[in-house]
Length: 239
Length: 366
Ligand SMILES: Nc1ncnc2c1ncn2[C@@H]1O[C@H](COP(=O)(O)OP(=O)(O)OP(=O)(O)O)[C@@H](O)[C@H]1O
Ligand SMILES: [Mg+2]
Image 1 (tube, each protein chain N blue to C red):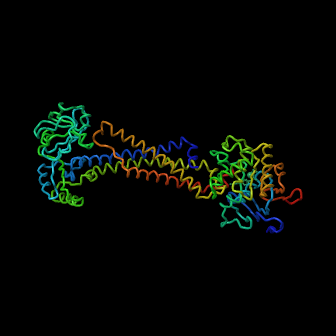
Image 2 (image 1 turned 135 degrees about the vertical axis):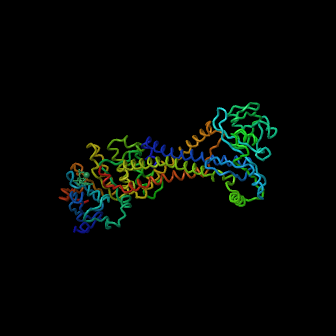
Image 3 (image 1 turned 30 degrees about the horizontal axis):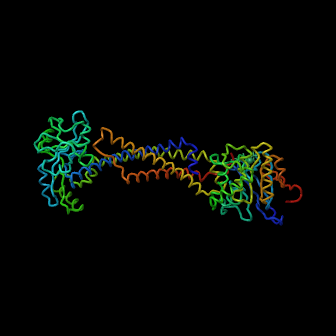
């Protein structure tokens, strides 16, 4: 059993992860052995580790894209199990950012940002307004109607970040958001995520294998062979 | 959204829609041809003022020959206003292909509907003369005063007539005994056209048909509007035309299914992404279904247009000119629309199910 969330009474608990494990190929591959973690409201966390240590697997399970083989976790106190409405959760509570952006190639930047909002009850007007505003906020106000193929890698990732914010999520899950970018645009993206975290108080989880990227975050979780090996908070402030 | 999916591979979409279009065009053209046959026939009879058709039983589309004395026996039924005998033949005239030649009792009502547009009608039943329907005249290139050879006999064209129906306008009309002599069937006819008394209802007319059939062996009696539909050969033609065109649409079905499956497989990542963005399964299913149905409907629209084009072309062809006018009624358009929708729906279900079950985790790892 992990420590109850009350270990950090000042802030609410976003994820409570207990003995989470994931096997592939009928148990031959143990991508995640046993992970115990607590993620607090407003945390800015990096999950660091070598290739294949299970970082993406952990993030995908938190995003309900994969089901755990063993163990469990809860989101804001509700168990994420068969009764959990994962569609509503993916739509409203979390935003995903991927290494390879995953923009829809046949849609413009603006339309890509609109996509998550099509699953919600909003008017076309509201959607357009919000999408335009978000693209301006990530510095792409001049690129609204560009196709993804006409954007640079850094710009694409910024579109993806705007998209992840479309439904005003409370958590961002980013899997190697800088993995396909040069170090300069990688820095821009991390600056942007820091700013979002700072200004909007979002909980942000960033998976990376790059210590430079991890340095942007306040809390650093290191993984090895499907296990958490260290969990440190930088700068001592705790926030 | 769905349109964008289809337009991503415009060529593939085009060819798939063309596949459906071929099937729909086949339905429109082939079925339209056979229902046109039925319609033209009924209209021709109506134009002659015929309510009930009595004919000899025959195995083919042409009824067997009957004795012309039967006309009197039919006319004796209480419901009949009058009856007239017709010998109806399809003959090759001079160097033209098959033309309908209709020998009608001179005194019968079969002549009443013919409006003379040039020349005159024969003076009497003995004059060695024929009149040509306007289309027939055009096809044969004859005008009043010209000679025309029918089998063994030579006749003079004395007039051109408008019979008010395609079959009538495409045929040659002459007095019954002259045709009987020319083709060597003296005293024989194959149709008795019956005009009913004005008060006779459709139900009564049907009852009369059944009575004639049971009382006079060897005869078939039908309402004019149903003559062809009740003909066994024609029923086979019609069934055959549906079978052929449904076969054509089967090819379209596999096309749509293949395209939709490919499109779903190609977009595994994108579908996984939509699911990761919180789209519900039913929204993904809906998107794929809309795409599939839009594809089939595009095919339908093109199919109707090209089917109608083909029909018009066929109707103008020398082979069919004057024999029938194609008929595409609202039922046929609706039926084929239904078929197209069904194709879209049926071909969408499995791909949509596949799409909805895309595992976002696996799809997004790439
Ligand atoms: N769908 C799958 N089927 C089989 N094995 C898988 C599957 N997904 C992941 N794995 C395996 O699970 C292990 C952990 O994978 P994961 O993607 O979580 O690693 P990672 O830490 O994100 O690595 P990277 O830094 O290279 O992205 C790897 O050994 C991988 O091969
Ligand atoms: Mg990874």
